[in-house]
Image 1 (cartoon, rainbow, N blue to C red):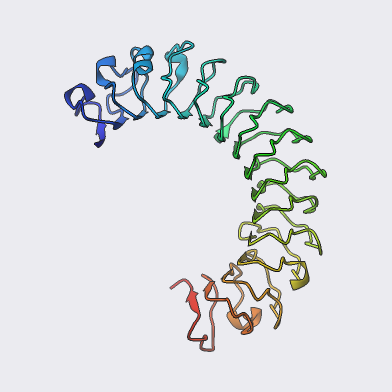
Image 2: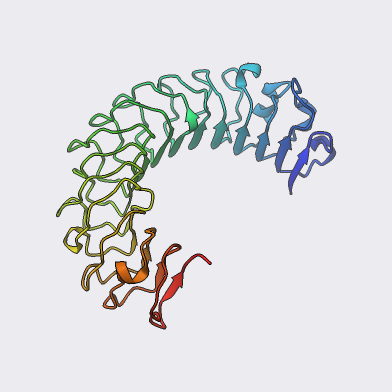
Length: 326
């Protein structure tokens, strides 16, 4: 059973079959969730107010715990979390040694700012939430060898040095202010999905050879040259790169590209043969007319063109799906 309720409406002790519960605080500040509102068989708990007795959750079957509250009021101690817990989303967990070794997913909240010294050994997903103040240098060996996804939605300002990122990492989102050039061994070969930061404006050198998805950020404005993009790349999105102002020749694009999103200010005509024949989805965010930018008719795989600001004076091929604003 899944229930979403305000605290004034229901307590879990009244509904012992609940396994997934979302507590929405409607009682104002300085309100605590009473321990008798937590059932032992609960597997998912999301709360917006602190617990009156944090130790009660140690005796539950929780798999996922989300706390939109300050844990400074909670006074958690070692062993406070159940051994079944795998996913922890916490606004402000700031005590060392509290995270159980069973955790595979952690999302730290905005106030977390401690060195990464005690991460669970089986951790797979690590996120620093939007607006996070976390800014401690990450040292080699601090990130678990099992980590697959690392997302900085924060103001982290340190350069990622060689060997900091584990060889298990497949997805990386860089923090907003990150603007350092990649060295030969900065990015692990295992990386498949790379989202560059808002401020990143460096040449696309030393990208990992197995990359399949690349998303540059707003300030990216470097020419893309032959050999920079790996042949494995299938998805390239420049839709957010509003500073980008360079022509992109087909010779620099990987041979297996399937999804291609051009930057908002891309005002160069796409000539015949100007796109890889493997393109299936084409996204145009320019405000130029359809006729001035041109869409070649020699792409056998192309089926969808998303162009919210373009207008066409000529009929489109019957097989093409064309999306535009009304």
